[in-house]
Amino acid sequence: MSPRRSYDQFCSAARALDLVGDRWTLLIVRELLAGPRRYTDLHADLPGVSTDVLASRLKDMERDGLTTRRRLPPPAAAYVYELTGRGRELLPVLQSLGAWGAPALAERRPTDAVRAHWFALPLLRCLAGEGEGIVQVRLDEGEFHLRIGEGEGPVYGDGSSVEEPDARLALDAETCTALDQGSLTLRQAIQDGRIEVSGEGRLAKALRDN
Image (cartoon, rainbow, N blue to C red):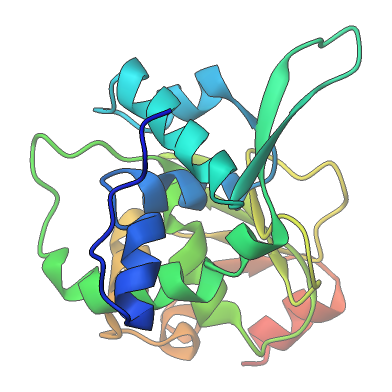
């Protein structure tokens, strides 16, 4: 592997950018916050990245202690990539970066790709402090689930949760974007019917009473 480029500045921000400042690195972290992913899955959910660049970034991230690679037992027998504890510490960094970038989401451009689970981190931020549990989210673009206040491990997952969710939310991408930008609060969205809350768990009841 080629040596990592450095800004060669004795500054914590510069050191951080030495590790995660390359194009695609933080978006790989975004995908791996969902838990272990195969290379093919990562490539599918990072439209626009070349196979060479993705492979290079994953090698760099493994070398820098942000990810690990392990082989799944049979019958899967495939390699998966996952975040280390150090890599998972980038969650609040990504959430803050997303909040800062939200005003740039003026409208979706014709060339913009979208995946339902890309709204997971903004919703996770909006739901912070609402309780603990699994929240199943349905958008027109697809479904994903969130783990609210449950400590270490994946904070979201694509598709349906294998466990019974504590609450189910149905909304659209426009509402997610408004929540991300701060032009709409969670309470307003629920009261205005822009978010449909269902379920009988404590978290669902708390959200309905929000």
